Image 1 (cartoon, rainbow, N blue to C red):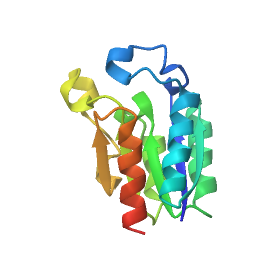
Image 2 (cartoon, one colour):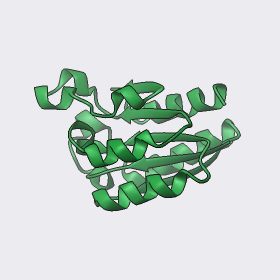
Image 3 (cartoon, rainbow, N blue to C red):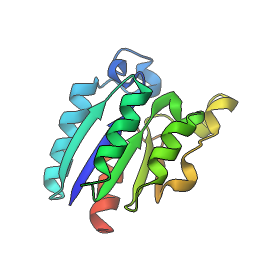
Length: 142
């Protein structure tokens, strides 16, 4: 099973930004764990991170041709980017929405996700382990 993990805005500085909220791992460490978990689950995973909304949309479009599952953490775009929502809506494979922090228990504006209804599963507030749960879900439901 081929899975793409698409991380969005500000996740490149996650190890430096509010470690008590997002965990202490930087993006490279997070991706290393994702690759380890994927190997355990016999998944072929690619990880990408960008601070460019257009690039994120382009990556969604590219993955339409090959991905069997998608893990998305668009960061703040989760709450307002209809461009990303429209790109994700094209997928006919399972999408898992992941957030390191519990967005439902933070500021009011963070509790709205414009992509939640597209997700086969949501994993929020579990830190880096949320990615493991997302990958396990996709492996089990392939």
